[in-house]
Image 1 (cartoon, rainbow, N blue to C red):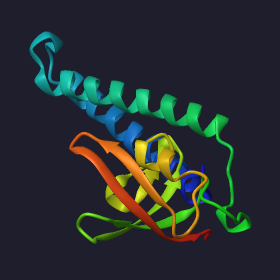
Image 2 (cartoon, helix red, strand yellow):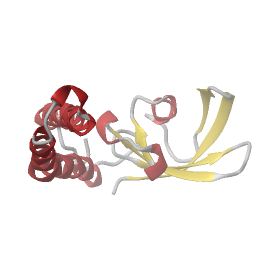
Image 3 (cartoon, rainbow, N blue to C red):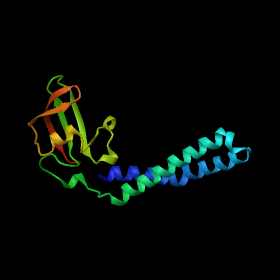
Image 4 (cartoon, one colour):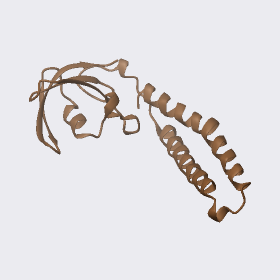
Length: 151
């Protein structure tokens, strides 16, 4: 996992523990004061939210406890974890830039490509100027590696 990904997940964990958890506990307490819990929608909604928050806290704690933080700026060479890669879609001539990151920090909309995705797997080991073919749900796509940076 990259340092930025680790920090993002750690910040989310801190927010859940210090703000979200206490707020939902207060909401449950307030809903209990309204009486009959069997027909209390506020109580059931707060309990459901509490369940989600506790599950996410456990998930984040597990991810962070096993995380190995890698500094991409200390890497070089062909494409590997942490590389920031600019590729050219050979069909549309559109350039896209992605950083190859771990599963927990992946967000395709933000340009963070899951290392287990078909595109990332096809890019691993390639260099600038190489062409790759990737099987996508819409069919086979061809890309050319325009640049590889480790930042």
